[in-house]
Image 1 (tube, rainbow, N blue to C red):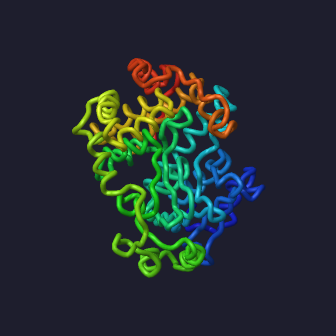
Image 2: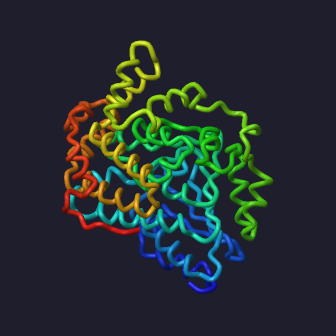
Image 3: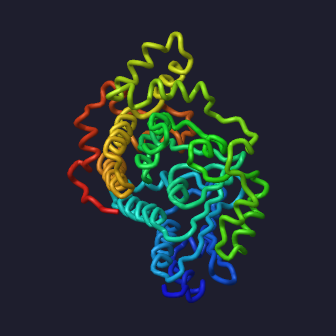
Length: 383
């Protein structure tokens, strides 16, 4: 869209989508049209993404990238509880092999990759929970603002799924790849100072100031760094919050999950088993992993390991994760439906999920390869 001939045309691109009609997704622009605000407005669902929302955002970003002057994008979520808690996994479980899930992954992952290559500022205000699809909507942008109420997690192994939206890319590229492996396996949470320390957030501020920051960014004419430098902290010395991952915990994570200490997931399990009677961290890890889907854990290990060894691009990681996601939700979705049933519908109080197989030691490596190959039933997609 040459020159961004007004926000009206941008709105019209998604005008027929129910997300716009219902107000679940809002788009506004500064008077100069140099800054736009994408606002997620599903607070009762923790601003979780729908396919309508993702389709609109993906279309808008694709058009803006064709502009002579792509606008600065500010992404926000309604309320204080969540920036965005992920994607519509309940719908995904319901749809099964209808083909809806394939459209979801293709559209979401294209959006993720477009954000990664977006030629202007992309600023996300992490006010509250940011998980799964919310991470994909924000992490690949230029600026991520964390606060004392930010909670970050990739919890997918707990619902019979696997971290996606390029998680094997960014979690394998942390300064400590072992931390990335651990986060994907366990779904462990990070707070604002953790995110700043490990490079997942670029800035930190008090959450009560975020509404004002949003207003300042909308008025900044694209001078994002000037606004953020005045409002936010970038150094840990200026942040007065205790991390969820202490120095001792980080050492333990590196000891068991660091790439120099294992050559398979079962190596990690064996090392944890050997220490569980004397090491509280090892005992806690085993208890956590026992509640995760065994196949999901094995697939995540394989994805992370391949991305780390090959230093894969985001496009390559998304292509693998597309086949993985299609395998787990479209081709053979038993584990996924069980995980979603127990976690979302039964709220963790019903019959435990009937995962098959029931133990990590029973996962067949050939099944992992089949999942990563889409069971040879899914057409690959490039990003």
